[in-house]
Length: 333
Image (cartoon, rainbow, N blue to C red; front, side, top):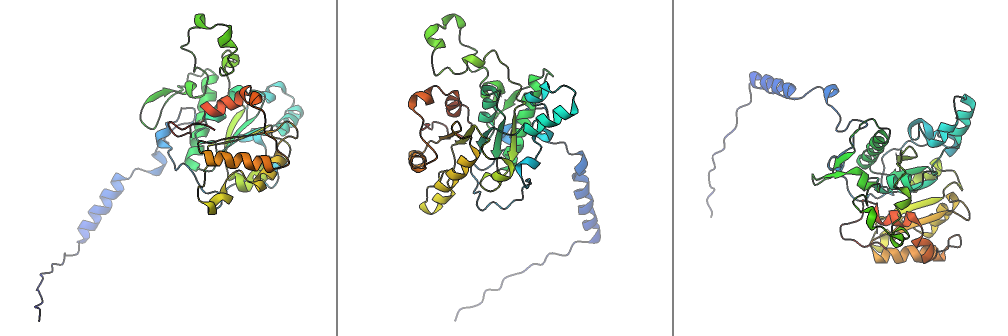
């Protein structure tokens, strides 16, 4: 028979009342009052991406956080929080009735669904000054980053001296104007630019170098686009709809979660303007690209544009270069 080994057990003595009081006092002293904790980024300052990192994708079908949304699109005033200084409102003067009628007509006409950190949203506001751009994002931290980035870009454009230099997640300082596509070719010597360079279809920024965008026509909204888009967007009101590098959902059982499907294409056609509305998709996954093409070709309300039209579309160029969700070294399809 084995012998039981005797083990010495030590029992710690309970803390005295004085010890508890000291612990509580030190805890209270080390915790600052909540009303004195400053925000990470003040409105008007360019946010730093490293403070707003989040997971790359989110499953919208199982995302149960609450969202505020109107019962109908016509009950939502976009000028109250999103476009208070929209360019169309500057033509109204001081007439209250004219201002109210104009504000009721302002609603998003271009959607960047899953806008990420807002690179394409800001680029589209510069490329399409006559349109109203709205980025949709489901992740709260990323949405706040884009909101602060747009406010900082607006403030900088108004000449208030706000710094537009930011810092990426790796700690490297960068110029946000270069991210927004405003000064990408600033180092290029104009004396070396000939007629061939000016006619280069890949140089889409040439016509916008003299135009400094105010970004008053751009905003971001945190919502679940697969559930609440009908509550915000009226039918036949969109000219462009962007899906950049969506979640590929590789497993076959998860294919219904893909942002492009036969059912969802019918809904997208409901919001796009007949005869002129365009659906833009880009991915670095070939299987997903083939899925997009196949579903769009099968749908009776969509037809593929020609290669010539794509090469002449400055939004295609922006979609390939301005989005910040593309993996490093990934190819665009």
